[in-house]
Amino acid sequence: MKLLVSVKPRAKRQTVHKITDGVYDVSVTAPPEGGKANAAVIKALADHFGVSRSRVSILMGKTLRDKVVTIDE
Image (cartoon, rainbow, N blue to C red; front, side):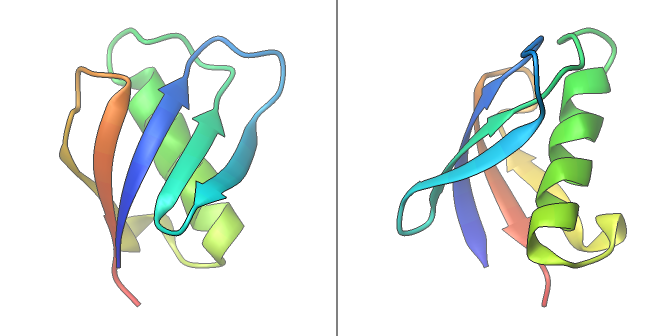
């Protein structure tokens, strides 16, 4: 499954909200430095969908707020 994800780093709380079909808004508490926010996004999505972190990967946008993420089911 492919998702479009809009990331908000340094948020007060870590949340995942579905905006529309296949588009998600993910807030993470981690800063956008050294891949910390990307790791937090992967963890948040894995927890939200109930899969292991190894099944979630960022395809495009590793240095951007808007990302394309895949989840292997």
